[in-house]
Each structure stands twice: as structure tokens, then as C-alpha cells.
Image 1 (cartoon, rainbow, N blue to C red):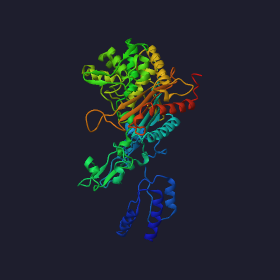
Image 2 (tube, rainbow, N blue to C red; image 1 turned 120 degrees about the horizontal axis):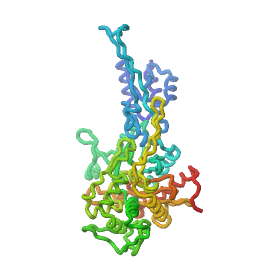
Image 3 (tube, rainbow, N blue to C red; image 1 turned 60 degrees about the vertical axis):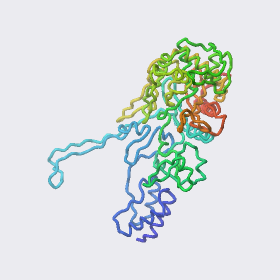
Length: 542
């Protein structure tokens, strides 16, 4: 056939519909055909039936289509961190695909029969037939509309605040159902391999990248390795960066796979311990007279101000680290440790998503005095976002720790097996839970949480701004992009239907004004307003 004309037509079609076919491929294909090879694979995984139909309609002589089977995700990057993907080797990876891989893939059938020396079946011999078994179907708890809206808001806010990444988790506090769990940046599971794409980096771009974005060079063995500081500054060395900034790190669901120091969103949990144990009341006072020094470790308030005689409610409203030291002193390490353990810290949530991490909660006898005090305000202790929101759900729902779950039902061979809500144990009393709700409403009305307020509704919540450990020296990083900002809360406050955590990793755009109150709190308020309208929840106040 007219090789040159047919290949040119096919090339024109490919360049219109595919990123991974170029003139080099065309020349290689032409050389292969010149060598009269029996067959040459041009492209795998042609993803849309219409494209296949168009190729057939071109009636290209010598070009054939071979059927293939692979997982296709019709909504692209929607909920990609929850779903995960199936590799080209049909192995589930990340999210639900990874955790339930063996359940989803089913079992292949087989026929075992006797054969003669020529390999032909002996019809009178014994034959064993094992029928194939379809894989399970997994039904998730997420609300598709809410998940989509949250993903769009999160993407916009991460870009606006120039953050590395962001996560949002929304849970029903009485049942543990996950309504939404979003991450940004995201990826398209249909084209997950694109996350490994590197591009050449111009020297002028190096200083404009976030300092957390890895830069690569080629070593003597032609391997890509991360560049040192000196290599980054050397203009004669060609540098590369992942197009998405993260490489395969974008596959990780940070809501469950990455722990962090939660900062001030942790303060209400410790305060609830003091309320429940009777060590404090909302009206209990302390004298906020100035910076504290504990075992040579300075402790000061984030505003670097001191407020005199202050109530415990005001400690939360003003987010006073010094006040939380007073709470920790009243509790002692054992009581504080035991309650935190009951809140689920130091334990896996067992949410059934691949890659869940758990940060160990050391025994109280291993805590130094300064560690106990800093942990009271959320520094020096680590947790995953899911652990934090699960603990907040217990504080909101009357004091019971519930099992968080993302799977609503499993359908196996036509049988629907629904996942029932599970209460693990009680953490605090109903009265303590109600008191904390009132205190946290005051935080939103009178304190740093005001940007999370939704007119007409009582919102309970708390801001958080935590430092990030330095990667180059001891202690914490400084400068732009050296904090994690967050807001945790629930709504409507006195009979909560939803508990939510919003978290941004290393936001930069607001400079010295980058706090949980200026980033995560308004994002929380925007999402909460959408949900209250979406679910038609009536106002709780005039």
C-alpha cells in the first residue's frame, strides 16, 4: 500500500487525539515496515470508542485494531485520591482500588482436562471446570455533588494562597460516614503515568519555584537524581522538574497517609479533657502575665501579647498558648495521655483506604515537661487529618468515638452488604460535649474563628496555624511557606450534622498575615454555606 500517504494520514489523526505520538515515532514505524515485520504496535489503550470507530472508517490498509480491556474512569480526576487506579498490569493501587484489589478483581475461571501426547483433549477423561467469579462492587459514602464542589473550592483556594497542597474532610459525626474527602493537586487515573513526566527547567525558573518542589539533574549513569543546592545554582547543568511538581507523590491521599502537627485545632480537644475531668470550667481563669519559660523552652502567644486575667473560653477565642500550658499543668501527663488515646490518637482509624499512616503516641512516662505543655496547644504531637476530624466528631456528637468509614456497602454476587455505623467507645460525657460546643460557638462569634461564620447559623470551630519542621536544620522552618494552616469545626453547632477539617500545606500569598483565620477559616465558611444550602438545613438563629 502507499506507505507514506497512509502513515501521514494516521500521523495527522494521532497528533490531533494523542500527546504521545510524534514524528520520531512515525520514522521508527516507517523503518519497521521497511523491514517487513509481521506487526508493529503503534499505540495501546485507545480510550474512546469514537476514536476507534474513526480509525476503522479511514480504512487504512495494514492498520488493525486489537481489543483490549482496562479500567476506565469516566469522570477523570474526580475523587481520584479516594478511588486510586488500576495499573496496566491490572493491579489496584492507592485508595479503594489498592485496599480492595483482591475483592474487586474477582477470580478467573479454568478448565482442567486430560490430554493425549499431541495435546488434544481426551473427551472420555476427567474434566474439571471452575467458573469465573465476578469481583465485588464497592459503594462509597461520599455525596458526589458535595465532593465535586469541595474539590473545585479547594483547587481555587490552594492556588489563591500559593500553597503546596490542601485537604478537606467532611464527616457525619454520629455515624462516621465520610461525605467528602478532597485533595489538591489531583491526578487523572486514566493517565496516571503522566505524573512521572519531567520537563526541562530554565535557569530563570529555578528561583521562582516553591522551595519544596524537587529539582532533578541527570547523573553519569543518565539517571534522574535530586539536585543539591550547589547544582541548582550551577547554570551549566540542565535541570528538570515534574510537570505536576510532585511526581508520583500526587497519588498520596494526604488526608490519611501523611501526619502533621495540628497546631491550635488541637486545643479544644485538650480543653475538653479538662472540662470532662472537672479540672476546668469555661469560666475558670488564669493570669496571662507574659511569656513562660519551661525547662529553658520559651512559650509565648502567637500574637506576642498578654491579656491578664483570662477565662478558659477566652483562651480558645484568643488561642492562647500560655492558657493551654495552665490547662496541661492541671491535667498532668497521665490523664492527658489517656484521654488522647481514647480520642484515637496513636491508633489507626481503619478507614479501609490504602496507605493509611499512624503516628505513635508515646507513653506519658516518656513525655518531658516541655513536651506535655507544647502538646496541649498542638505542637510536638503529630496526627493525620483523618485522626483529627474523627476526634472532633467525638467532641461534637455527645462524646462518642465513632468508626470513620468511606465504604457504604459491598455488593457481592448480587448480595448487598451495608456497612453499619459503629461506636467504638465513649470519650467525654454528653454534658462536656455540650459545653465544648458552646465554647467553640463563642470562638467563631467572638474570636479568631469569625471568618468561618455563616449568617443565620451557629457554627462551632477553631483555627490552627502550626509550624513545619525545618529540613535543613534543627527546629522549625521560617519565612514564607513555613506553616500549615487549618480550621476544624462542626455545624449546625448544637445538633451537628457535619464536622469538617480544612487544611493548607505551606500557604505563602498572605505573607505575615498567613494564618488559619485568613486561609482555612474563610474556606470552611464557604463550604459550610454551600452545604447548608445544598441540604436545605433551616437557619438556627435569626
